[in-house]
Image 1: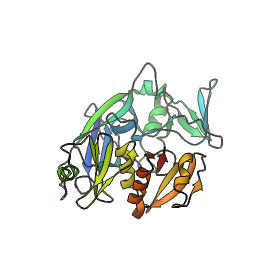
Image 2: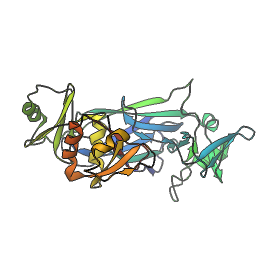
Image 3: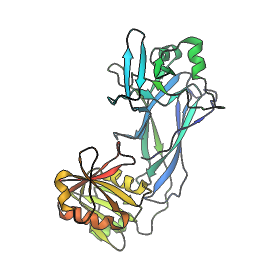
Image 4: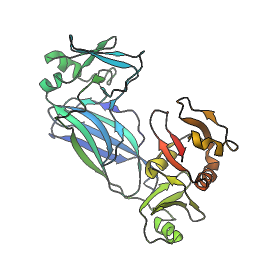
Length: 333
C-alpha cells in the first residue's frame, strides 16, 4: 500500500464523539487498477488520539505512524527524559509518533488500493487519552535531541495546531507505550466501496482460458494488463493473447502491488548467494551492500522472460518492501 505524507488540516469542533474515517477514490474506477484513494481521519472525541497505523484488516503491515528514526534513543531515569542522538547507530526502536491528534483535528493522506474484491476492510489502531493521561505518556521535543514531559497549560499550548506556520512541526513526539502488556490499542474499522468499471477481458474469461471454474486467489498486473490467477500450487498471468505460468511467488498481492506502484523502468532484484550463478551471464550483478547476495536491475520489457527463467530453474520469488528505498524483488531457492 503506497502513500503520500499526511496533510494536516485545521481543527473543527469535536462533535461526533468518535474517530471518523472517510475514503474517496480519486482515480478511474477501472477493475484491477491501483486506485488512488484519499483517506481522511478525524478526531471527533474530546480526548487526544495517538494513531499507530492504517492497514487492511488482518494484514501485518500498512501505513504506520509509530516509527523508527535514524540514530539511538536513550532514557535518563534521573530526569525522566529521552535523548535522540542521530549520529549513533540505531537499535531500531519504534518510539516516535507522527500522528497525535488533538480534539477536532484531522489528517489526510493518499494511498493506493487494488480495485478488486470490493468492499475491502481497513482498520486504524490507536490509543485514546484525556489530557492528564496524555501528559504521563508522551515526551515532546525541547531541542538538541532532548524530549521531556509537559503538563497543564504548557502541554495544551504545545498541542494547539499552528496551521499558519508548519502544522506538523510540533507533532513529532516520543511515545514509548505503543506496545503494552496491560493495554491494547483501540481499533476503528472502515469499508472502502466503489462501483468498478469492468474490463473488456474479464476474470471469468481468464478462468475459462485456463480451464478453471474458480481460483484460490486472483489479482491483476495492470502495468502489463494481465490477470494473476492462483489455483492450488500453480499461478499464471493471463490475457486474451497470452498465458504465462509463474514461478513460485510468496505474497503475490504485495508482489504485484509493488510492481504496479513503481515509476522506474528497471526493477531491483536481489539474488541470494546460491542463485547468482544461474543469472550471471544474462544480467550484470553487483554485490549487495548488506551482504545478503547480489543485485541486478531488470528492465521491465524483459520481466516476463525473466519470470519464466526463474520458474524453469525451480526458484522462488518474493518482495522486500523494507529499508531499500521503494523495495525490491528477491530470488531464492
